[in-house]
Figure 1 (cartoon, rainbow, N blue to C red):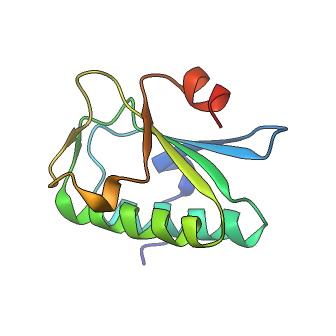
Figure 2: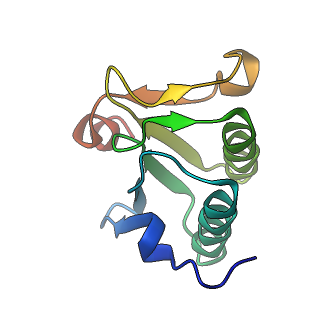
Length: 120
């Protein structure tokens, strides 16, 4: 793990009074190393007792299959503790290079954070 990468370099975190944690990725492309740091941060939030998340990918243009697979695995972990994850995307991004099928069936995808929060 590269400790030179700070959480604040990769995403902004907002904790809502409702208990939802919004994690907004900052980069158009998330490297594998950044993905690992992001996943570690999610684990820290879960260990603090948070289990409802919104991953805001509206600034991210592209997620490769490895990154998306790791995110789906983390989402399944959150689901196993009765948590929930919603994704926020725009109509044109991110481009998800992944075979959309059962692994993503549990995801709710929204075009903005407000809709994601309101539908929790």
